Structures are given as C-alpha cells and as structure tokens.
Length: 139
Image 1 (cartoon, rainbow, N blue to C red):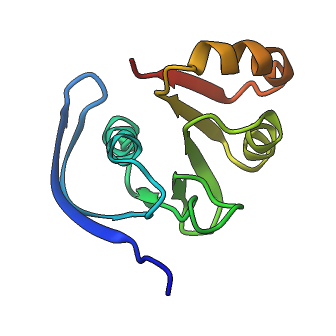
Image 2: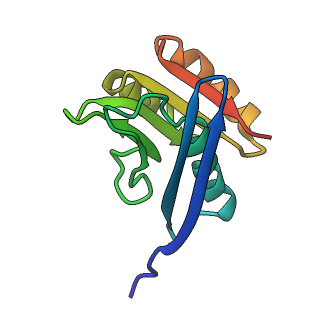
C-alpha cells in the first residue's frame, strides 16, 4: 500500500504595499511522501510572493507537480483555462522550462538547493529564448 500525502493547513495573510496586494486566505497543502519540508515551504513562499494583484481572473493555486508530470508546483489559470502564471520549484530540466514558457504568459522558477550554481551553469544557455522566465534563488 502506498504512503498517502500529508495534509497541512495554513492561514496566509498578505500585505504587499508595493503591488497593492492585500489578501487573507486559508491554504491547504498536500505534501507528497517524497517531498521535503523545505520544498513544501518554498511552495508556500512562492504562493505568497506571486499572489496576483488582480484576482478577477482567478488566482494562484497549488497544482499536482509531484503527481502529474505535466503540471507545475503552482499555477494561475484564468476562468477560460488560459495559463497566466506557471511556477516551478526545484531544478527542472531545460525542456520542461521551455515547454512551460510556451504554454504560459509568465513562468517563475524557485530554486533553493545548495547545488543550484552547478545546475544553473549547465542549463542557463539553453534558456535564452524563454523571455517570460524569472528565476529566484532562495539561499
């Protein structure tokens, strides 16, 4: 029998005066058995820091990246099912990032591992065509 996901609940309160984003929301996080606590917290951080200023066309939500290979860690889909923002966490390969860049208006990558520099040195030149990609490194 497979190990099931661990469910965590959080109350997220956002106050970003620079972007005029103020929100309070209950968050339910499903932590995959193979996911570390650190990665789960980076997903929560990415949710908070990428929360859209205008939620009239949907909002950022957790996707099934650990269960479904074609989904990101988080995404913002409009009500017409258009992907507005695709958020990856970790060190995906260049093909995954280029595919995301073609499917979404905006792509964000959040990396946090100690091996990030070595990984980035090998992948950076392959991503020059991805003009809508933003990379964040969390120390």
